[in-house]
Length: 128
Image (cartoon, rainbow, N blue to C red; front, side):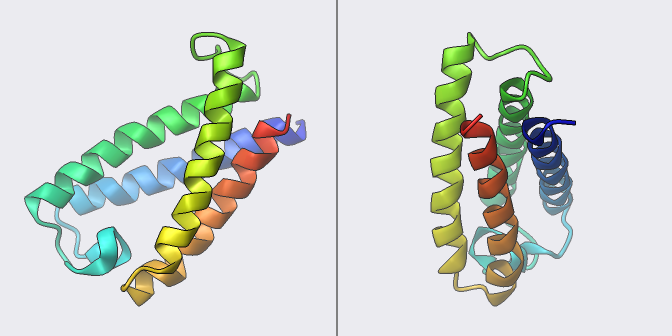
């Protein structure tokens, strides 16, 4: 397996785990301190909607990773996939900062490292 393929599969697995986590939050799991600023143990409706949106985005992000590694057809075309991969890398890098300054210590300690890893994996893909 090539480095880009490993990065795509690893990113997809991590994004799938985050999607399961968001699904649990939607279902009422008391893990809200790890997400959305950590102000709620059980998420209110508006943040559950945000979690549902996150799941959709995670699926899109994983698809972009797999497409970039030639493990799925490209989005629109290869050029679009390449640009979108860079956009996601920048978005995830911003996520490092936002999770790092969260008022929630559990969110900072858990989500910041996860986003650092995702950013690194998407950077590997973007450089391919």
